[in-house]
Each structure stands twice: as C-alpha cells, then as structure tokens.
Image (cartoon, rainbow, N blue to C red; front, side, top):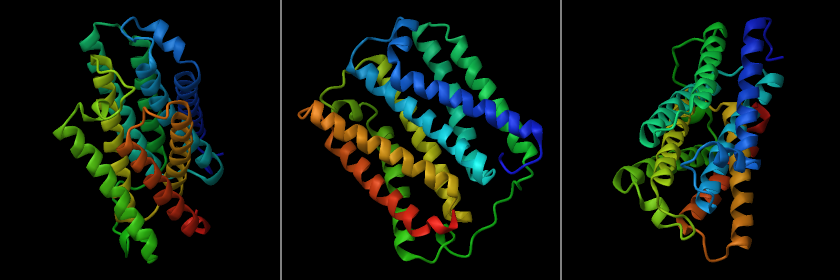
Length: 264
C-alpha cells in the first residue's frame, strides 16, 4: 500500500483518507447533520449548495489518497493538500470568530489531518526542491500544454474575480441567498481555488502529476453531473458563468487525462 515500507506513513495516509472520506460524505449526503449541529446554518438551498461543494472537495482528496494507495505516493498531492487543509483551518477559525460558535470538533479534525499529512510528507523522502521540467507541464504535446494554460487562467480569473467583487458569485446565482455564512463560504471556495492554482503551477514547472490530474477529472465530472441535475431541477436558477467554467474544466481535464493517461 502506497508503495512504501514505512508503516507510519501508511497509518498517517489511511487516517487522512478516513477523515477526508467522512467529512466529504457527511457534507454531501447528510447535510442536515451539519445544519442541526451549527445554529447559524440556515436550512435552505444556499446552505445545501455550499455544504455539497465543500463535501465534494474533501471526497476528491479521498480519491487522491485511494489513487496513491495503489500507485504510490506523489509529492504533487501534498503540494495541493497541505495548503488546502491549512487554509481550511484558517477558514474554520474565521467562522468561529464571526459566528461565536465553538466548532472545536471540526477544528480538531482538520488540525489532526494537517499533522498526519505533514508527518507523511516528511517521511516520504521526497525532495523539497522542484527542478524545472524540460517543457511546460513536462510534455511536448501542444493540446495538453494549451489546456494546462487555460486551467491556470480559469483559476486565476476566479481568484481575481473574488478580490474585485466578493459578492459577485452569489449575486450571479439567482437561487442563492446573500447572508454572512454564504459570503464566508465563497471565501472558502476562493481558498480552494488558490490551492488549485498552486497545484497547477507546480505541474507547469515539474510536469503533470497523475494523482492531481485524476483528482481533477473526478472533481470535474462530479461538478458537471451536479450542474446537469441542477439545470433539470431548477431550470431558471443557474449561474451562466459558473456553468461555463464547469464545462470548460471538464473539457480541459478530460483532454489532459486521456492524452496522457499512459504516463499515469
């Protein structure tokens, strides 16, 4: 498992995967648990939308750990996951300060998760220097390079868009209600976009990462399916810009995956 003989690394990665899995499944399939647990969470479509989004991100990280369980550890995963978990801890702390809630269970879970990933990263033996690949994304395939550039551009656009207009995402989504919790959730999504951008820039420098590309395809497929279901359920409540980005991400990531899958 994980193609390592280090038992501590195996245990850390197993427990990290378990936390990601539990967090993801609860957020996606039992959001009533979260609403009942936190008084400031309103029981409406806006809360469900953002809980499902965060749950999907956690579940995709679990898929990445499953992938590495068979294929072996990949330092690209840590380049993405460590900032993700650290920013999630910051985000939870900010939420606690904003609402006055004492979400120590969530805070402890994410601090433990961060510690597990740090231990696994330190004992993995991967270098902390990232040598530049001979070509962008470590490939000479032009379509792959173009898709990689587009992925970077979309991530950067989303981050810049939040900085310019933090409330724009909610305003452009007719079914979402503007409230402090929703606005804080958009900040959390922006933090996730920062981690995605970091992982893309990492791959631009050192080459494509099998686990990161696979995670991206899984995430793109999940969001595309969610968008299609939402379009049927709420035909007049979509966000055209978000829908465009979801479709583009799916095209970009599946193109990169299928043109390079023999390397993964």
